[in-house]
Amino acid sequence: MKMILPTYNEKKRTGFRLRLCDMAARPLLIAVLPFLSWSWATAQTSVYHPFPGTNSSWCILTGCLDGSCNGDYGYIIDQITGDTIIDGLIYQKVQETYYPVSNNGCCTPPIGLSSGYLRDDTANKKAYWRGETMGQDTLLYDFTLQVGDTLNGFMGNCMIPWIVQSIDSAIVGTNYHKRINLESDTCNGFSIIEGIGSTQGLTNCPYLPFEMATILQCVTVSDTLLYTMSCGSGINPCADLPSYISPIFSQRLLRVQVSPNPTTGMLILDGQTDQLPLALTIMDLTGKVITHKVITYLPATVDVSTSSKGVYSLRIIQRDGVVSYGKFIRQ
Image (cartoon, rainbow, N blue to C red; front, side, top):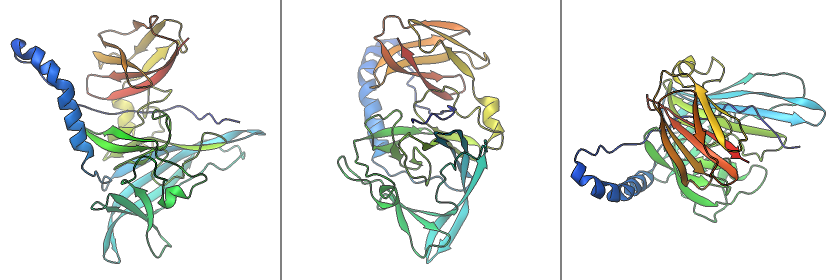
């Protein structure tokens, strides 16, 4: 039985813009823009990005299914609450809390490593974990892995062996962070990201989507959204999360509905209008841009009838810079 979890997915990423002040220089600027973007991203990913400090929070959706009942789910919140020194080394204190949302007595959703201590070894591009009852560190993340390497440390001891399929980058805040992909599907698959951890949670074992799963919803620093998943079936990432996670998000995130999904040719976008105009980009699953347009009113209709049948990613940048991601099926 394949597991289906509530889809609250993803949000925020911000890039940079170039203002073309001189009309005569526009052709040259357009020509060099892809090179500048590539160079900037490469420079960002060549430098190790550590985990954020105090007042950082990870929100993880967790759930399970059983063939005889409807399953249970909840949220895991991991929070960095400050620093401490153990054996002469500086650690970040991590407090883990589980918030059950449904309690049908069906099954027990998976959780992380519980509360403990995180240590960044920035010189060696690795992160270590120390549980409250552990006498020494265990390797949590190794960001020196190359394509073809086997995932090691704690993550490498979870269920099945994982092999690095590709290495690219993910936008975290305003920077590109190194992303190591353990599945060929970089949209919905399992990856580890510098400064973020795993796409399945900070200290959660990676699960294949079957009878149990954990999904990283978002990472925040002092109630400011730092990272959310880059793809997924929902375009309203953290706005629908329970109020104990951050009511601030619910107030500032744009709620956009995309219908029908699947579609045979037309998409209708609707939602709040206080963040207009919106920059809409539609991409195939390889990242190739299919459509880009500015939406100045809602509801708005987008014609995708000339696109081939398949699955497409959808990105919307609203006026305050918040970015929403989603996906739709063109039948």
